[in-house]
Length: 202
Image (cartoon, rainbow, N blue to C red; front, side):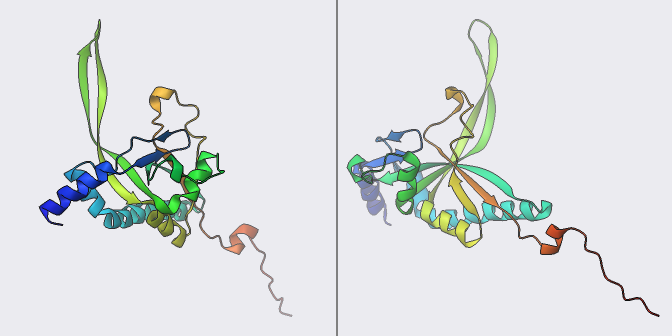
């Protein structure tokens, strides 16, 4: 896109209605593209989704096959739907069912830590706090889930992992996906050691 085309596209995106969906909330003030940096992420969405999916699949399968047991991993994604409340499926009250029914129309924002720093401040006594700096990826959720399916990765939305966390430690804008892989086992391994018949020679 030319500079003018990019400016026009960014302004059009700012005018569109987006919803951030999660199992615990729906935010009607979501934005997908707000400036030049997020536009770059949007333009690289297909490439970044492929790279992200490949990394997660390789790590999960290699760990499962190394230990010869099922392995699980959790991925936090902020899910963005282009539409308004009236565009949500009718007659569906369960938030997880809403998300899964719209999975082919959702963008997924992945946040990762790029750096940390210790900040010291005074509030009656000296104390310090760890500040996290983040980077972001815009992913295509249908493309990501398709790659999981093609490689035998199971996925579902997990709402139990964060239940015990205090509210201040949770970010309700994010949906926790659980992905898992179980290596194929040799039938002989499942049966245990097998006795071999030896023919006795006279």
